[in-house]
Image (cartoon, rainbow, N blue to C red; front, side, top):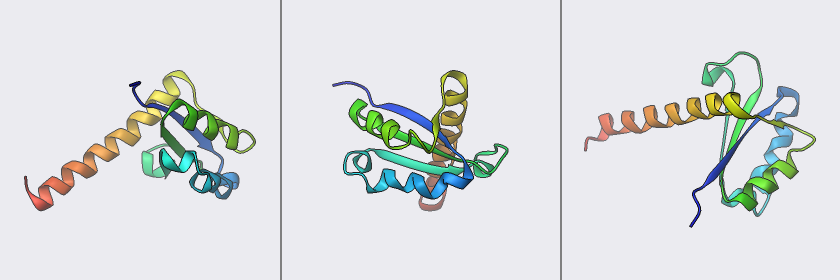
Amino acid sequence: MRAPVYRVFRVPAIHAPKADVLWKDDVVSRQSVTARDAKSLGLTGDDRYVVVEGSEAGIARAVELLKDVARPLEGAEAERVYGRFRAQDEDAASGMGLLFGP
């Protein structure tokens, strides 16, 4: 079994509603799709960032659906934004542990 893959997209604010196509698509909606505003990730601008994690086929479908809407990030930039998503998820998980205990 292959490890899950991911792709990070920067969606300009003007195109943010068009990115909803990801959650409506049968293939992509079966992947893990997370969207956050730049400011919530500590980044500048009004863009929205979307991370799609899952199978290679699911990622390829997301790239196709967003080809006219958003550009996928590459290299260090993609890793930096993905790291911010993961850090927020870990912070949220540890906060739940504090609320509900082990």
